[in-house]
Length: 433
Image (cartoon, rainbow, N blue to C red):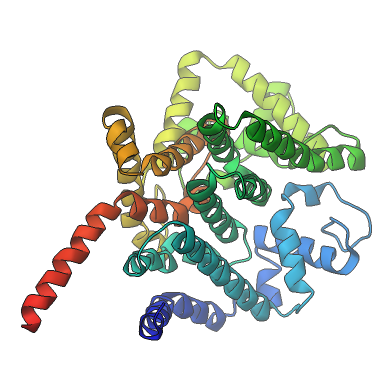
């Protein structure tokens, strides 16, 4: 890349990072990055306690002990481990968020460099992808110690590897590695990961059966390590996270039809279904985290058995409708969420656009090399639908797809973007004359 072009690229990146720097300054100015603030902020606090304990004691616990705790397994391991590595460098809160910022920016740069190198795109087409830096949902969570922003980057890398290497013997293992990282960074991605790997297998099953089989065995083997570890540690069965029962209960209860929204899904009362076991919240006080999880799961299945098919269908429709609603269903004065609405409209449009082409213009997709792009978008769509039915989704959970959906929107409509470049170039030449 010529020095002049590289300079323009760097200047463009710095300009597009301005909103991130601005919100970083606002967060710092409002004392968000003080120990008093971050260690009293729910999920963020839990991730920090986990990472700190991992860094100091090399044990997956959240209470400063040398003994693994059940409550620690509420979180899947990838982000706490990464955050623990940052803790090894510094334990100052603002320094940690700066390290997170640098790490995420580096990963985005690596992802786009990978696509530029192996995707065969011209230099000028890099610039539309820089819009990833101003995706509002990504910016919102990148300012926190939650796992949504880093997960969104890993999903971006996973999809880029899928687009580039799904037919490659040499590099296709990267898809399996990235899929494992994504899942154990945020299990809400489970169905998306499952569908993407299914499509990867179907695309290669005839031509590379043994490679697909080998990759499947590798995935299952590595995937099984965490549930096996949990079973051996606590002797309470094989499970991914200790939150499985609670999230299942939050997504299936009598209040979903009337009160569920895409802002507060994670704040729902997981104890509502205990009524179906003739129990109250007070009856669970002496239970461990994992025992509670099992009880919530049992209570939720009891609720489902007591519900009619029409009630179950209503709950499903409420959650799916909420999943695809680009607007906040509860009024909140969060500017980044408000300016994210046009982006979410774009993603809904791309979902519809993809389904249209897959159903009615499949040959055109194959000829234009957009078939794998449409498959990746379909995997996200199905992943969101199935997860919203199984438990629930919402603006926060769906933020993990923000970067990749913007990326895929650009790739899918690259022909249109190319025409715009040509039009702008011709007008510029006519004006200069």
